[in-house]
Amino acid sequence: MSNIFSGLESFGLKDVEIKDVFQENTQKREARSQAEQSQKKEVTEEDLIFDKSYTCPVCDYEFKSKMVRTGKVRLAGADSDLRPRYIGVDSLKYDAILCPKCGYAALNRYFNFIMSSQARNIREKISANFEYKPSDEKVYSYDDAIGKHKMALLNTVVKNGKSSERAYTCLKLAWLYRGKREQLMQGEYKKEEVTQLAKEERELLANAYEGFEAAFGKEDFPMCGMDQHTMMYLLAELARRIGREEDAKRYVSKVLVARDAQQRIKNKAIELKEKLQKHH
Image 1 (cartoon, helix red, strand yellow):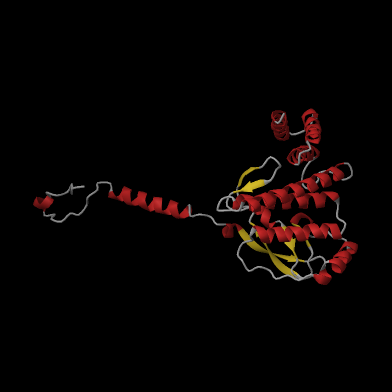
Image 2: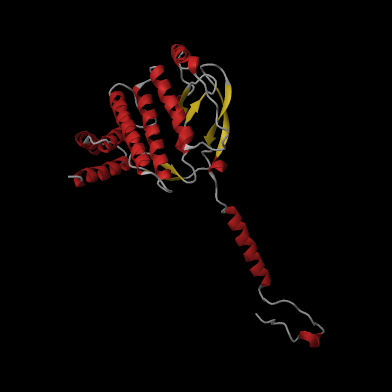
């Protein structure tokens, strides 16, 4: 741009170097755009987690485990079997808490609830042989998370935990295998590895289905944070995923005729019913 202010020499102003009438606005705009860019700086998984302190209810050992900052993560949506998807982090990786000293592990919601007889079983059957070297990585990999969730599942069996707790831990583990598979498929991958992960996921979904079905008639609601109709919908979707279509249809019908089911769950059930019809 030529210097608009050239020719002011007659006013005694020789070297006026202003090229832009709205220079201040332009500078402000540029400064604002730089500020916005720096705010938009990619939020990493590390930014979204912190170390939380725990005291193990089995051995009283104090330790830290990584947790997601719930106020900072944003939900992007959910899979048809209710697996949540967050932006920037798979929060499911951080849900199992493992005591690095005695090997007691559980999903966060169950960690502090343990009876003395259950603790005794864990000390005898797990702690006696347990060895563990915590990873010093800043975030948990899928393999770290799968290992911790497997320990949580083993603990639910050893302590003879409720069917719903076993089922919920299987479900979370299945979701982690799905997450690992999806991550793998974003780069170069071996077909066999992806097939194996899908197989592991399906087996765990089958276990989750069996456990939730056993719990449905025996345990109180809310179960694992879900009301009765959400659980019916989940059973229907799990049944569909493991190839038990008649069971899926039976549970879908129950949701659709329930007068007090939330509309959100009814809508999901309608989508599921359409999927089941298309399949034929």
